[in-house]
Image (cartoon, rainbow over all chains, first blue to last red; front, side):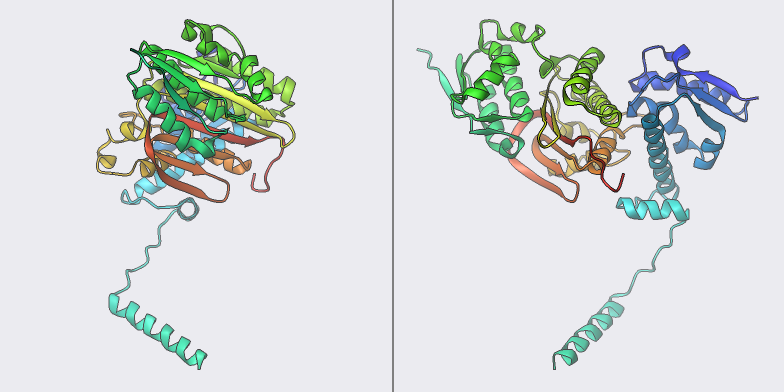
Length: 149
Length: 281
């Protein structure tokens, strides 16, 4: 049976800071292993706070697989903006986790990070030797020269 | 004999003129003269960035026990606007206290996270600017994040100054946040990873990257990243000025440069296009 966590009952009006989000996060962590589904009821309260949503839910995607988080958590009475914001937060955290797990190497640029996140693996290009690069450069310059003639 | 020192401000008080404005403001803060004159007579256009930086400078001078006087703009509309939002009260006797009284939501000094101010500003935006729900949510998100940042990281004694302006013809909302606490580069240099980074502008850019935070043993570093991403999506611009660095993140390009003058704190300027969603959204 799914367990329901009501934001209004637990936090009341305190739904903005990271400290407020930490309360929800701890509750979710307690329920995590005991329930297959957890329903978070936002009670139609507009949250719009990255800090709160990240600390309450986003951090979970940093510690666990995104698929697991998505399968377990369900949202009720949430505004469309908050849902979009939450999805963005979860994706960012999952990308961060993915980068961390790849030997702590930072993947620069959002595009490449997204690629890694989608493929779930890094295809590392073997480093080219200097002699190879020189050879290639030589070929390129030769081609240019021939084309100019 | 105490001589009154004059600080002359340019015609345009916008983020584009940040270097000149900050130079004058920091000189005023550093000066040891008992009386300071802020000469705004040439000013014709004053954007939220100029207003907040100037207010923070006057506030700091008043806090240092200096007397601040002002020469209001000769330009009629500009002078009228400053009077309407209660800016001229800074120059009255006990200016600091005068500004704390409720004058207008357009320029306010707030201490920490002020949800009532956010609500006031959102109401003003909803009724006067006719913003849609998405814009209102976005505005709320940005206000919350920036206020939390000023409270958590800046450690600013005076809190922060917030100013908002709306330009209906171009459907643009300008929002500016200024505090005179610890700047972003100083805070980031407390981390071992950035201890040796020399350029302030590099650190400012790093601060907008996901996961970069100074919170110990806790996750963070999402606020500025999300503001940046959402602004990009809505064709907006985010400018951050802190200490010697300046970063301007526009939809298609990012400009990073060192200002040459040191601003003792952080100024954040946001330009948000309202009621229009980009194709990427």
